[in-house]
Image (tube, rainbow, N blue to C red; front, side, top):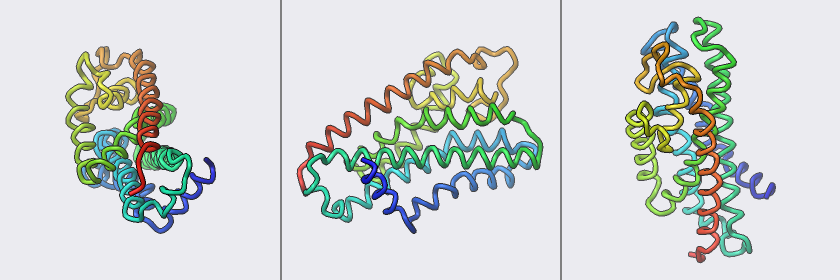
Length: 241
């Protein structure tokens, strides 16, 4: 499996995907500086990050990884690999690593921004928030890869933005916050004290209840494992095209 992952990583060399790794978090921070100013950097950047730019960037990475392999007919490996699902699993792992790295790059950038313009979110809370965003978004990777295989990259990215912005903003502050797409936004409320609409969570609000963090994380982890297994089995049964 390690060889498959290394091969997938080498394929990203000089690609737009690799630029997305640092471009997405940097653009988020610069956009917030321009639109909201330095004093609102951390709160504003996190809001833009988890509602639109993070889901958009990792969905693009996942979709473009799939479409590039489709165009090149998976470099002839599709017809040779005995365990074809290894090709799929390697791509899922690669996209998961991308998600983790871009979340950590954002954390570093937002920490530096806090030092320069004033810390609105403690560093420990910011690190936990970035780690939680990584875990709570990871389950979508095999989902959007599958959608891309079936319907194309454009539909995959469009659906991702609709689900992660439209559904998340509506459901995150409701009693049915456990709808998977709304979990990241809901967990940010107790972690960084920011609502999906960018406003501060009121002191004493039930939205600030941290008890939602464990079940939210558990749902996300189970979905990631389940969707990876199901899509991997589907890919294994595919015929050479």
